[in-house]
Amino acid sequence: MYVVQFQDPAREPDRIFNSRVEQVFDAFMRKPVPQAERMPAEPPVAGVGASPRSNLAFPQMIANYDARHDPRTPILSAEEKKVFVDTFTSTGFTGGINWYRNMSRNWRRSEGLDYTVRVPSLMIMAENDRVLPPSSADGMEKIVPDLEKYLVRDSGHWTQQEKPEEVSAKLIEWRRRRFG
Image (cartoon, rainbow, N blue to C red; front, side, top):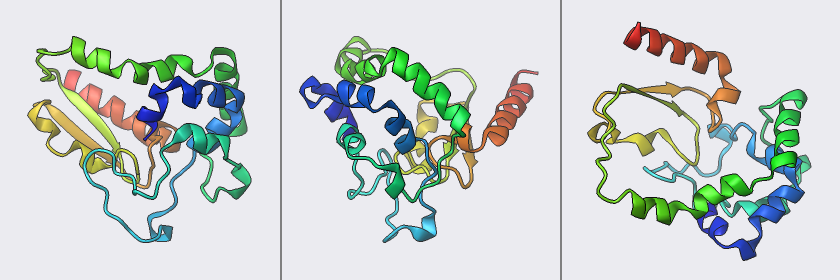
C-alpha cells in the first residue's frame, strides 16, 4: 500500500519519483482499462477498492514503469503533461509525500473533533475509479447530512482531466442551484 511505502524514507519514494518525474505522470495520468477488458471482474468494496493483484507500491511501480508496455490511454496532452513535469521537476514530490507521513500526527491532533460536515457538499465520483470506487462513499450521508453525489460515467480517478467539461458544468450547475 502506497501510504505505508511513503512512511519509510529508506524506501526512497522521494528519490524515485524525483528522478523519474515524466514516468510518474505517464503512469498515473491514464484512463483505466475498460471494464470489459479486465480479467476477472472483481467488485470493488468500500474503501480502497483495488484488486489484491493491483500494485499499490507506487515507488517500486514507478521505478520499473515503461509506458511502451502500458495498454491504458493517456489522459493528458503533451502540453498538459509538460506543465506537471516542469512543476514537479522544480518542486519535487516531498511536500505531497510528507502529507502521508504526517497522517498519524494529524489523526492525534484531531481527536475529539466533530467530523460532521455542516455545509452543503457535492461529491463527484468516478465510475471506473479502481482506488476510490463510488461504493467508498456509501454511508457518507451520516457525517455529511447535506450531501449530493454525482457519478461521472466512463471515467477513472482523474475526473477533472478525463471529463473536464462535464465536471466543470456539474460544479457550476450545483453552485448556482444551491447558492444562486
